[in-house]
Each structure stands twice: as structure tokens, then as C-alpha cells.
Image 1: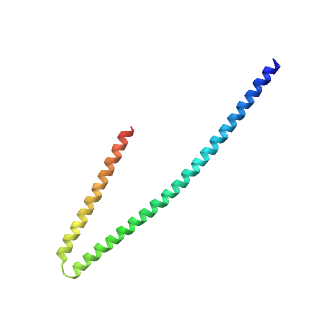
Image 2: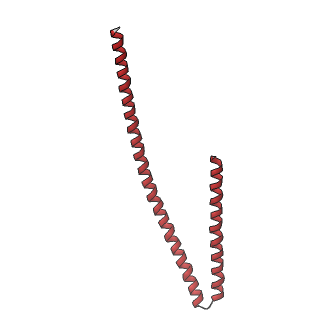
Image 3: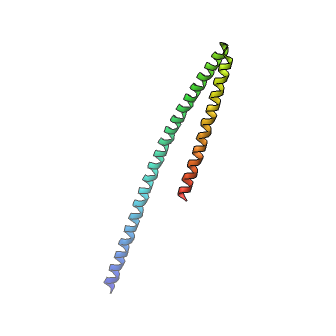
Length: 116
């Protein structure tokens, strides 16, 4: 009887020890997973920042070139052509940005409806 109780206590101690080891392994795994996610997010933010910076510079260069071309047209006496070109650029830009906004809104609605 005493031996059986001792064996049961030994088995229970081993189970507790295995449970502690398992919890320690899960903790180490979750820590390494969180570290990997943090590193990945850092890399993603750097990539996104570089891409946004590139697009900003590209937009600025295009804006300056269009502005310079319009100024050249005005200085050479082609104000009406410059005005028509400006009108085309403004209407085209507004239409493009408006269409982009509508498409993004529809995309968000579609993904929101599919997740429900």
C-alpha cells in the first residue's frame, strides 16, 4: 500500500515536471515568434517608408515638370493652350483620384461583407 502511494506520487511529480517543461518550451517558442514578428514588421515599415518616399519624389518631379511646361507655354504666348492643358490635367487628376477612392470603398465593403 505504501509502495503504491509512493509510485503514484512519483508519477504525479513526473507529470508536474513534464508540464513545467512543456510550459517553458511554449514560452520560449512564443517569445521567438514574437521576436520574429517584430523584426518582420520593422523590415516592412522600412520598405513601406522607402516606397512612399520614392512615390513622393516622383510626384514632385512630375508636378514641377508640368508646372514648368505650363509656365513655358504662358511665356511664349500660348495662354489658351496652357489653360486647356491645365484643365485636362485637373479634370483627369480629379477623375483618377475619385475613381481610386470609389474602388477602395467598394473593395472595403466587399471584404467587410465576406468576413461577416
